[in-house]
Image (tube, rainbow, N blue to C red; front, side, top):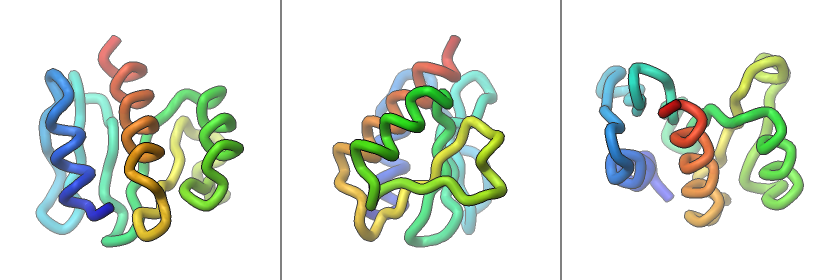
Length: 100
């Protein structure tokens, strides 16, 4: 996947809007973060903590949680090795959590 693929998928979800900068675009629903580009190979996705563990167990090579994110509802997705289905699943979780 690429950051453009991530953006297209995020924008396909109802009420998701692109914000951020050209270098670091982000997508929000109701002004709440869904996904943000960190760099060309990494995006940060906001997910419920309980679901984060499931994502990490199901796709151990696709996702990670650096120490700075351990206390937050976030996971990094590594686009160079994450299958699209995994990234889409995480974005869907973020969208569900944030649209409420």
